[in-house]
Length: 300
Image 1 (cartoon, rainbow, N blue to C red):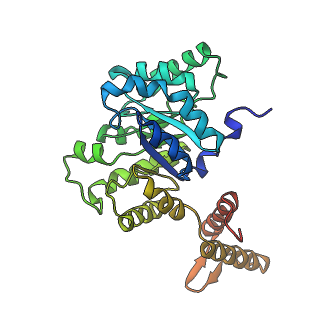
Image 2 (cartoon, rainbow, N blue to C red):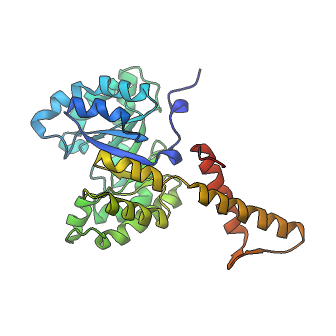
Image 3 (cartoon, rainbow, N blue to C red):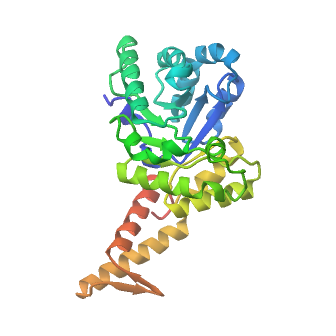
């Protein structure tokens, strides 16, 4: 019988992570049809402190509903030192697939979270080690520590970036083109890649779909394959951008075929149009085709 982890969508295929108000039962249940790969019961900024007790009680029903339709069930708790312990004790009864903790800036916070999760797994008869962790980095200090944060526990399968809190910490005004977040987004992805965990790009916090698509396109150009969202209407846009298109698959197959043909002729590289195809391009193309196949793209 497969373990709970074995039945989850693999981290690399979790394209859209949707934050949801933690105490709104109707919204939480309706999100099952959103087509997000990960749904997040958000107990920090999206849940006023006075509503957190009732939000925590709903955890088991909500996560069970999400998992029943193949969605990865996540919760974002407050930092352990500011209410997160109370969040965690209550929601762990619902067996979340992933525990996200807000405002992580130091590896020691991840170590403390792992210890508390392990204790609660044992208490609630959850297979030890099956609860994933995903620190949420929301400050300049956190960005500088991303690699160490990602490596602080073997349970860390991804690290989430931040939009509003990051801009505020930098003292930068928010803009639709997000130039103020450019370095933070690049560095978070670089450090996560070095740590071999999924980097989840920050959400686009404006309503327009065109802006969301442009922001997701930029993230994809940086190398991200996952992005968070705070508006259900953004899910389809993010999924589309983070999924290789049929045209991309055809182009990748052409690169693979050209390179393999060149090698068969004893050449060191191939040329396709203006592109010189060398080993890195060849392996990138193979990875794209494999990702497309895993996501069910036609022709992959």
